[in-house]
Length: 421
Image (tube, rainbow, N blue to C red; front, side, top):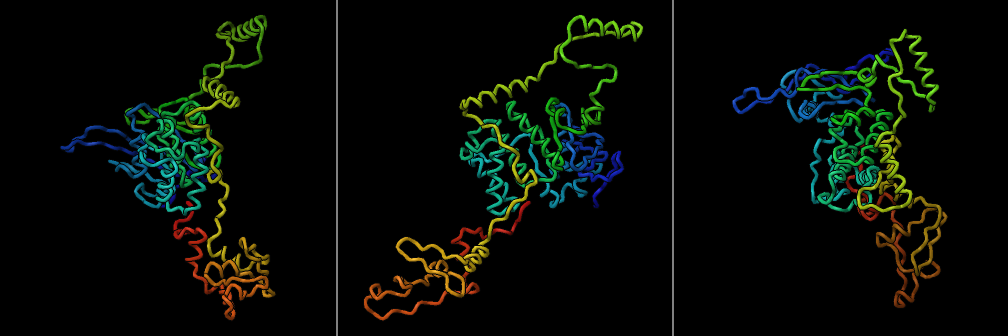
């Protein structure tokens, strides 16, 4: 199935990441009789780089639609595709990050082990796993409690680690089902900022929630479901803007100025319109709460809960990940080094000969080095007066057992098998 493309108003072709057409899901009872019509003739699309809201009260069909898109449920009728492929296509799933409505985590693993487990499912190499885990733990504010078992976490802290696991594979499509459930206002603000940041960087996000205030600040377009049907669809401005009223915001005005404005409006409208309400603007309670917490942190007050997360992880910001040097590369560097390598305590450094490389370290690892005196040759005092044994020649790079050196250098034997997702 080829990737489907759509046209925006500008005329530029835009890739449609998710396409849902006349989707219906009917749950049946034991006798195969229709029991619940959870999704009823739903049609929508999600474009690349878009933050899309899937809204509705509990039981409206949001989670069922998401599970069909993920291939966890089979549709009854209709058509849907993800990245131009069927939802059951395994290759497409590597490009998706998913946070379910309830985070089912292994209770005896700690946060670091949990993320490492999910990273291994995507076959990430050891160094990439470690780097991403560090960045994600800092981002969600769990670095200080990363070695505590997940069973000891609060619901909000478990939600944070769930969000981190949804991002471990650097997904192109991120599906978040009620992401702010259980989070405090600080965590809620952070998740909204993260969603907006991912959208700016070209990620596609499907955000499902019944907390409308959280969604309103984030989404580009939305559909509102009730009873499995779409009741409204469009952008925030299209759905929320009131066309029968006008709001004017100025600096503070005195009563005389307000009365003059009211008289002018009555005069221009023939007495049909007037100033109906005058009030001072209020900040959101969320902004007040965040300000108080930030002030407390500036005063260095301690807390036993999750810390405020850091900036978005580097790999999610699109910054390249520098691959670590492999064992072969490190060996090559040692064999081609122009500077002498400092000897261990009690030994004299062996200068590089006229032919170049200093192989004393490699030779020592392979058992080729003999005790030496100041001249660099075996000392008779260390050989019991016997004739000195000629030193063994340094091994060539081609003769070195790479697996032994790689294990000594700490190389992951499975590195390179999965690659960065």
